[in-house]
Length: 195
Image (cartoon, rainbow, N blue to C red; front, side):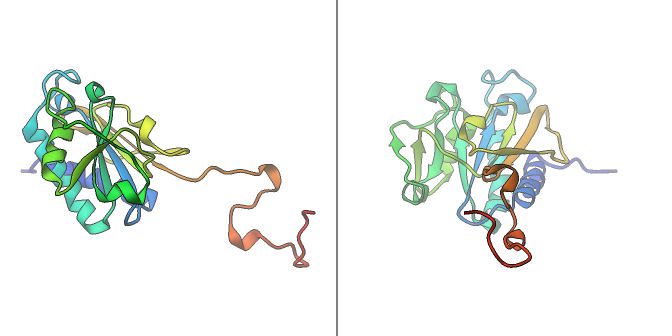
């Protein structure tokens, strides 16, 4: 008899896939959008579930402690999709703190739980994350850097919630003559062809 993976295990699995696909490094930011209502099969924003938030947080923490990225937990629309982050992120990324404390009915169960679980939590209004995971169609795109690259997780649903992920990459600029890999920089005679 096969044992169904827990919510924590499923979150850990898909987050590890995102970290690997996006080559996420220590100190980079991953935005986490979660509808605990969707996870339990209810419409987004209607039935927040603290026990689900705890399990999702645990799965994220397993990976975060190994990789040492920053997790940014997106609040719901009642707090304008602000983000719960560790205070260390403020100075490192020149972010501006905003004044609110997420609660299950104003911020969402996930953000509320993260705020209480982090040692030095604070809220920021906007962020430009290196990658993101969206559990329950919460729409995290506004908090991702340009250009987002979708990642197809091996687990497409956590319980009843859709899972979408993306990492970001720098924009390609320069057109047809641009070079994107260092080994292709020189011409055969070693001279530049650009005046």
